[in-house]
Length: 304
Image (tube, rainbow, N blue to C red):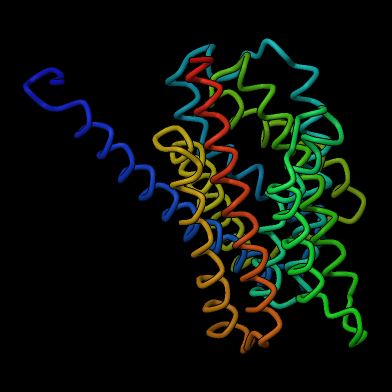
C-alpha cells in the first residue's frame, strides 16, 4: 500500500520508529545532564529551591512553544486531576533530587527503573487492572533486583536510597494519572501543566529556606531548566512516535550515561551489586513494557 508521493505506509512507520528511538536517546542524555546539575548545586541550595528553579526555568524554555499552540496548550478538561498530579509530582521530584544529592548516580539511575514495576502494581491494586502471573513474576524479579542494589544484609540501606524509591512510587502514581489525562487532554497540555503546577508548589516550600545562588549556580540552574525541558519534550514525542516496547529499552542506556557522569565528575565507581540489581530491574521492566504493548495491541484488534 502506497501513501502520498508513492511512499509506502510501512516506510513512514519505520521512519517514525527511528524518530521515536532518537527522541528517547536524546531524552536520556538531557535528563542525565540535568541530574549532574542537581548533584552539583545540592550542596549549596535546599532541595525545594532546586525543584522550584528547575521547574521555573523549564517553563521559560517551554513558553514559546505553548504560546504557539494557543489555548490548546494550557486549557484542560480535567484541572482537578492536573492539580492532584502537581501535588504528587512536587513531592516525588523533591524526594528524587534529595536522593541524587546523597547516593551514587549509577545507583539512583538503576533504582529509577523501578517506576515501571510500581506502575504495574498501582494499575492492579488501585485501578483494578487485570495483571497475569507473568507480569506479577516480572514485578517480583524487579523487586529482587531492588533488594540486590540496596544490600540490606550489609547494612547499606540509606535515607537517600529510600527517598529514591519513595519518589519512584509517587512518580508511578503521576504516570497513572497521565494515562487518565491522556484521554481528555493533548500531550502538550499534560507536559506544560506539570511544571506549571510544580513551580508554585515548590516555591511555597522553598520560600522559608531560600538561599541566594551565586552566579555560577544560576548558570547551572538555567542549564538544568533547558535540559529538563528538552528531556520532557523528547520523552513525550518518543512515546508518540513509537510503541513503548520499542522506545523504553533505549531509556535504559541512561544507566550508562549516569554511571559515566558519576565516574568522570564525582569519582564514583559502581559496585557489582549495582550492575546485578540493575540487570534484574531492567529485565523486569522490559518484559512488563513488552507485555503491556502486546495486550494493548490485542485490545485495539478487538474480538476476532
